[in-house]
Length: 159
Length: 109
Image 1 (tube, each protein chain N blue to C red):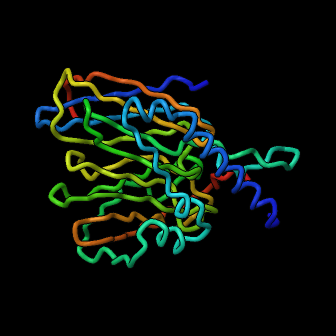
Image 2: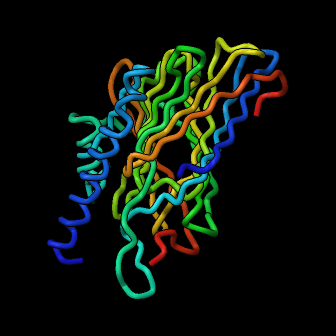
Image 3: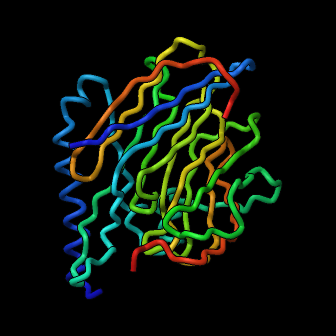
């Protein structure tokens, strides 16, 4: 893709988001909703930029086995890969992000959890090809990440 | 127009509530090409909020990397059968939807 097209797509997306925010303005007032969307992180085209956009600081590897993946080692269809991320209930997880290293936009999903929520999320994500899937969590002491390799036999980006 | 969404909220004996949300949405990344080679414009859900009564339990931000017709499971404590769970979402075109479900009792999912 040439850069002007890329820019157009990006700007179109931004415009859409802005329109979206103004459109739901009344809902926001009525329910006190605040639709934050981390554009830097979601539109980053490589893993390290996406993680930087999320955390703004360093991330430690998960040496103590905090993060548990519930995901198939092999996904037949990259368009629908069920991924669960679970952390021990005793650990306060403020936020949890799911990233796929080789996707055109590595960051797939970001969740902020209230103290009431159990640190366990299951979502279905798209994967372009076989790649590590990264779970990044924000705990009281900082950011921790772990990864698991998921093999994809059919890519999920419709290309 | 936003298509219907499904919410299942079940509280088990141990006080753990499982919320399962199914949303009908194309979740277009903006990278997919039509047969004529032109790109399908990005159209995906950017935010999903899950509330237990007035309390925001989970606030999600999504990109185009979440699958078409998204499914989300989340779990929380402090809920009871009869309480309400509200899920609302908005996409990058400003379409939005919200729905409330009542927690039932049963085994956790």
